[in-house]
Amino acid sequence: MCLDLRTIDMYTTIMTNKYVESIKSIRLEKAISQLDIAKKLDISRASYIAMEQGKRELSVSELEKISNILGVSFEELESGKSANYEKYKQMILAFLRTGGKIPKTKLAKLLYFADFSWFYSHLESMSGMQYRKIQYGPVPDAYFRIIDEMFDGGQIQITQTEDGAMLISQTRSGAKTSLSMVNKEEEKLIKKIEEKWKGKKTAEIVNFTHKQFPYLFARENEIVSYPLFTQEDPDEIY
Image (cartoon, rainbow, N blue to C red; front, side, top):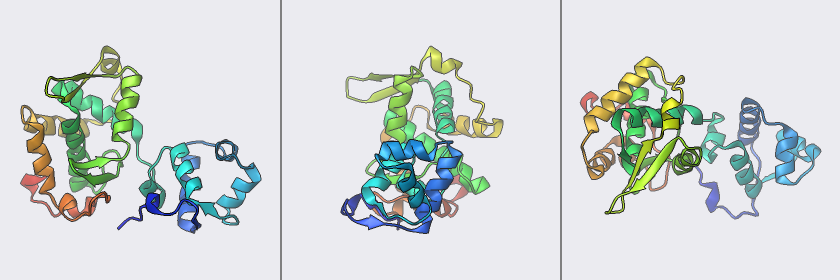
């Protein structure tokens, strides 16, 4: 079970080589300087360097700020690997190009199928996103933020139906966006998943994900397991 740091007293301090190494690794991967993070934490660069070297304690509130600066979840800091957010955005557009207008919750489930079905065959997810068990099924922590970013960036539009459902579709700008990060085999899987669930109600796809091992064996608000998904029947992966 992953440690939910947000439930810990914000004045408690933590310091483990695991987090320090992850922070440094992801910082370098994203080409963010030590000075940039130090400024946003309102500490000196020397103090931040001491933290990366394990010579200074890191408070939970600082860890939360760092995760926001790096644009990663606590779980990604635990693993030392950041998800490919740009590819995840392209996956969203790939589904929208195939399916037209898709309800927001249903789209989240289709993306889950893409990531976990890809893992089923290749032992790695399509985007690297971590999915959390919530009421409406497995969803990445960043999903709603990414949808907002794409809306603000003019790649998607969101319309509300009379019954309150939020329908997402791509804009002209979104249609011009390259899907260079999604290879042909991944695109083929995305189309198969969309075709399988085309015309099906959101409640149907939510109920389907609730019966799968990753959701069943995770506790509420816990990250669901990719490896557990390999135990699913081949005909029931999406």
